[in-house]
Image (cartoon, rainbow, N blue to C red; front, side, top):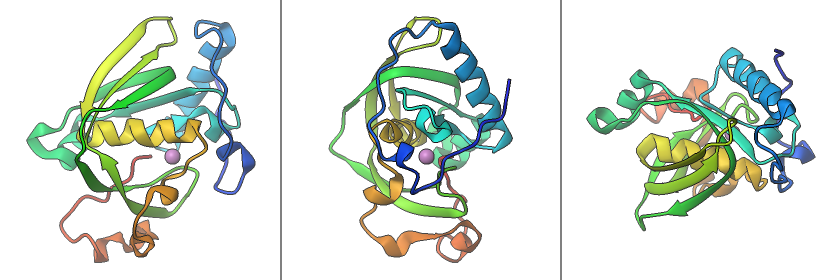
Length: 185
Ligand code: NI
């Protein structure tokens, strides 16, 4: 296993469209997943997309810890175990959007308030070749949308409506007193 170098905003690998993974069960994909997991845990982060570690493939990993889910969504919060999504597809299930604070390991030190659809369905293959299909709402839905945006070369600031809500994490408490410290990665 290895901790991988994380690309930062401005590196071209973050703005390209990633390629489908031809064989999700290939040994090099298993190794990539292990290294991404170690990199995400070291950062620490809640999600990581392959282009962020300079691999332009359609693969993301994420997890939502129980305490994080509760902090973001209260009683409705859903914890999600570590999940590997290979060649994911997202279907938007609601017209409703919500604003939430996001951070990104490729945009270190900053967080921004991003509108996202509140309810989605996603389909993917895991690293064992098994199909995954889930519905997600709240923070879970937000994290999946954020990570999958990386596969199409999108970083969260390009989703923002109000760039005055792009701030240093250390200053967020001025805007968000009593709220969570929010960041998706
Ligand atoms: Ni990100």
